[in-house]
Image (cartoon, rainbow, N blue to C red; front, side, top):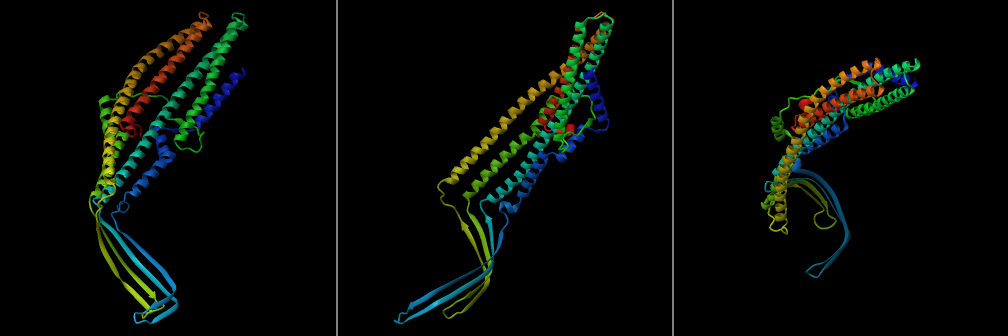
Length: 439
């Protein structure tokens, strides 16, 4: 009886706690996670870094302007011989120079390498957006899976509660029979064993529900990891109307991994253009404007000042670099080929995943229909068994078998519904539609 009272108290406290909880839908869970999940926050910062790098200045298209200043001096002893045979000397001659200036450098042309570099930076920015999208899609898939897992575990918790209630009722009937002398002690002990077994399963299921809830809190970025909440959905409702062809067409068009592979190929092509730019000459403009002040410790000029502009153009061409340019271009072509092969490899892998997931989806739909029929039969069988048991026309073992059959039918139906939903999540993620589907 102590175990019975413990379970009743636990259930009562749980019901009281649930009454004060917030109610969350899957969309609200996703919204909270998108705002607070650490993986999302990190990848968005990385996306901003890629966007900050995609500038013309970082690509080398803009000139550089520097201001510099300096001071230098010398102190030396001076000896000289003139052609007429006379000699001279000066000791401790001090010369100092002070300069301040602006220096301007601009690469006007480098064989279109700068343009290729700028295009690559913009592609890397788009790659950052794709990386963010992939992390968000993975997150939505994880949180949707855990959301429906929590529903499934709570359904199982409810089923186990019902099993405990039924076992308790059976134990009450057996005890009454035993005390009036119409029942055996063996049957009483078996009823207690079955009740304890069901109670143990129920207590263990509380741990499973707790683990699922804390995992969902973690995904939502809740610092209070034990936060209790209610789910708006109490049942898992499969969608049997997905279309295989439409999902595959959207996979080819919108799959984030495939789009990222295509971006990598574009980047490889731009890398080749960058190496090919070394086949052309380069043209650079440089200019300067500055002020120079000099003090001479000897000679006819004691103080010298200069203020003015200097400028120039540099045209150059690399004639020979140890065949490194040719090697880099060959490697760049190989990288382009590898990018093409990776796209083909990924398309084949996606086709395999799509086929397997679709097969699981259709198979679980059929199982779902079958298990719904089985559950109806198991419920009817259990009701008949209960009535016969109360009349003394059925043994405890046969009643227990009917009870287990009902619990197993409920569990199989719940698993089929959950598996269908997992297939839906995988198919939507594969086709790049998971955000629209669940959010």
